[in-house]
Length: 222
Image 1 (cartoon, rainbow, N blue to C red):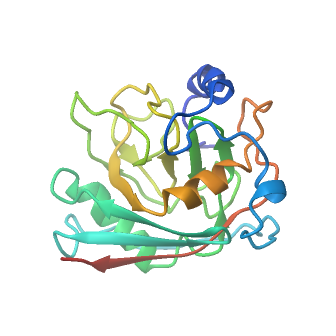
Image 2 (cartoon, rainbow, N blue to C red):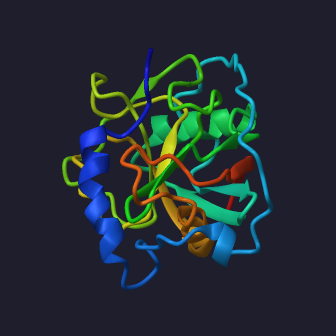
Image 3 (tube, rainbow, N blue to C red):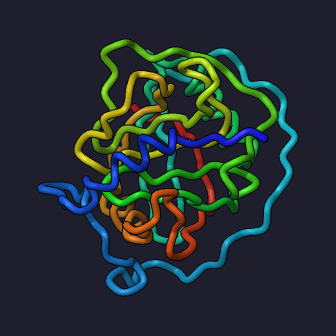
């Protein structure tokens, strides 16, 4: 069984970051969103869904694309890095257009590290039935707001299915193994709110509550 996650060793290593807190846009939030973020709509963990999608095109539909992610805690936007990662962004756009992300949840949340979603099964083991490979540059850094694709430990660098993560810590400290989607350019406060559902005592990143991805819409900008 495949498990599209960041390596458990990296997750465990990130836990000290959660205790340190953040100094700007909020990579260290460890309080529960239910207590301090009433803007979130109460939700339950969704039922697993089966997806059957064709392989994606090799290039995205346009050069300047933004993914609008609607969640039960609000909306955030991702500027897709189509120039440097055409295969990855084309796949992400394709999955969004096919509704793969709609009705899924953030199944892994590690405060001070990442929030992770995009699994149609909702367990960390699901995917779209295909993968693409686009190895990131050797100098790639996974800083706060960067959005990248999760993969299994045994898969080659740059492999991606449907699961993605948003870095919430100042620097996730990951090796350049994870294909880059882009960066959050609007709504980082929403990402911080979602991060608040993380349990700092859970090395696996099991959330304290459910935050759903209601839809992901990719649209041209500029």
